[in-house]
Amino acid sequence: MKKRYFELREISPSSEDVFGIPTGTKLDEMFYRVEKIGNRFIKRPLGGIPYLSILNLTGIPDTGKSVLVEQFAITQASRGYRVLFVTVENPAEFLYSALKQKCNALNMDFSKVEGNIIVIDVSQDDELRENPAELIDTMAYAIKEKKTSVCVIDSITGLYEHKEVMARLIVRRFFNFLKKFKQTGILVSQKRSTQAGESAEAAGGLAVAHIVDGTIILDKKLIDNRWDMNLYKLPLGSVLRTIRIDGCRLALHDPETWIFKITELGTIDIISPLKEYISEKEGVTHGGN
Image 1: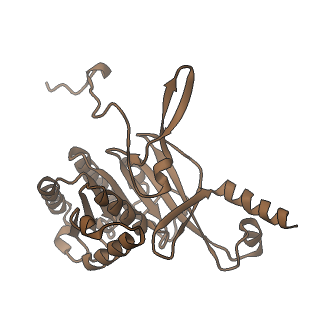
Image 2: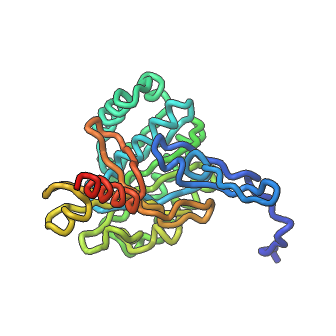
């Protein structure tokens, strides 16, 4: 009979130290480890998302999901690491333009970046989109041939958009595949209009959030009443964007809700925790009085 159990001491971890894979945003400071120095415990930022983690990035439409994973991809590519980018929603030529624009905005060498990002365009390929096994085979070939270490799927939802009952099965297959091939990955998932913006739930329910190593939630709030105008000190019609790490089983993390903005150049700028943002706004107002 095949042995299917182990004593804990028989298991050798893939890496003794947890370290970060930079995203090019303040998220790099929001995951951390704790080190004991003498009798004190010190928090040390990982400097990125946890190595070999597969994270879910979810949010309602127009919250910056694609912007964030594109910034992550070019940050890794600019550092000399090869990235597999599976684009399910955005045709490859438009992805190319978006990545080039972000490189210019972040003063990165696009000639280096474009040589380190390998794209699989699923947006116009029904066979890859409808057949997970075929897509996984294609990804496996690209990973082995191009020696990628980072993977982005934007979005995983597009692979089960009209068969959400299979969401858990499909997500599990891709999660296990990326683990097997030792990729650090981000899976973008889309929310349905009835799902709360601040929750980890997305199309297919909690299938993605339950399976992956952690979830990052992007949300936005339209300032459309006087109460919000007074609370956030923003004019009517403004948009307040937030980001929160909902959980991660591979590393400790900041649980706070943070304010961020999408700059005029199309990049992510995470500013401060929401509570500090509101406190500072109140201080400015009171100081003015």
